[in-house]
Length: 353
Ligand code: EPU
Image (cartoon, rainbow, N blue to C red; front, side, top):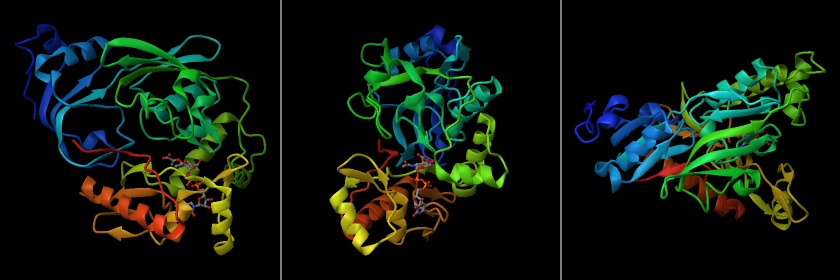
């Protein structure tokens, strides 16, 4: 429901450009497609709009949730506060492959833009849902490539001081699905833009076995970046549900890093347990494998469940409640813990207001 220019009688400038919606459904703003409402909702298209919105006395004391593409959240109830959809747009080619992308640009469309402009470096990250502003939050990664490899810097709005701070690669402390924005600076910043260093050397990364398999099937032995992107798209489409059809948030859990000693114990019982080396002491085990072995793959409970083709993905078949999916995630955590002694960490941000 539009309550029109709620703030207009207080702030003429704001009323010119921004509508505040009351009791507004968030269904279109989270890829799980969960239908909860926000007390107040606004779309922000510039930093000055953001500043004006945050300065409104009406909203000063309210809890706030800043959303990009909503591809990494699970809403567990109506949001008793202000939800702000960050919709800053624009892609600037600064020369020599240095590209500055505004946070509200859809990530996959940006990947396609880069390929169409002759750049390579992010083709393996094709079809990852969400907006560019969220990409550094969790250092998105897929098929052997992580964002940090091409990352140069980002601009972020510091909510408390209203200053814009610049973070280079080092100050983001990127790790596997990690950055300072998920831990020490959690909730403190809104990412406004991301600058990446792309290349035009045509060199591709096909180290992830399944990419080579698809390229071989297609009779391609010297793939162009666009062909790698197409291979990634077909792999993802064959395994991962399209959020437009079945609500989901991609991988719900992180792949756990465990001690080699623990891994060897599991291996005694399950000779086929897959792993990726991390360092001399630790290995990473696919959470999907643990969840599948614990009997959850394809399990459906009414209108939600565990995806039948990828056990790491929890799905909303339509009309599910966030709390139910959260409870399912906790049940999966418990049973993996009981069976393997491993704690699965959730990758998705669970929002309880
Ligand atoms: N596996 C199972 N059961 C399943 C699925 C997979 O046992 O249902 C095992 C298989 O042994 C398979 C292995 O897990 O070989 C790895 O599976 P996959 O290649 O699908 O990758 P993943 O570890 O499950 C990670 C990322 C994905 C990313 C892929 C490809 C995380 C949490 N997830 O998944 O990222 O697309 O690798 O690089 O690291 C996302 O973050 O939303 C996401 C989809």
